[in-house]
Length: 168
Picture (cartoon, rainbow, N blue to C red):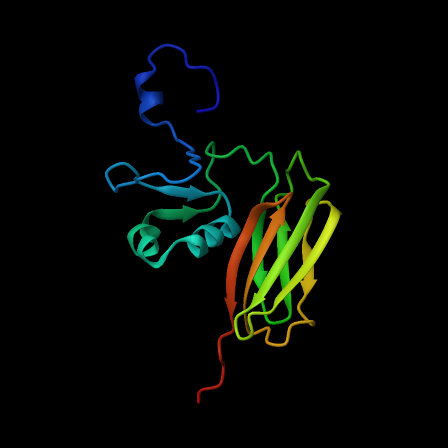
């Protein structure tokens, strides 16, 4: 709900959505939490990536993503879409942000095969359009974990694993 409550509040309060930020943990049950809705495919991928295998098995069928009228204001900076390939990381930011930056941006890439960490950084990053990062420095770009931080806050994380197109 995004405006003053007038008259009968029971219907509005009953359907109200919640955001919960807990420093250490929050005990959830399927009786308490019915759905988690992510405002973008990139945030959906990040959430699924961060879940433990047990949590993924328990909750993944209750996690959804995409535009939903009146659920999100979409006024702030977030990663809207992300594509990870063997050649590039392509990030698209919310084009309607009121806060495009500048941010202290950092991308960390961990190669799965070697454990080597590659970093890209910018102290005056403007998150208002698409951004591409070449993966030419990587030795094994077929498998890696990528994380984007904006002002030291995790904004995106996911794993890339190339699909072998050869039949044998």
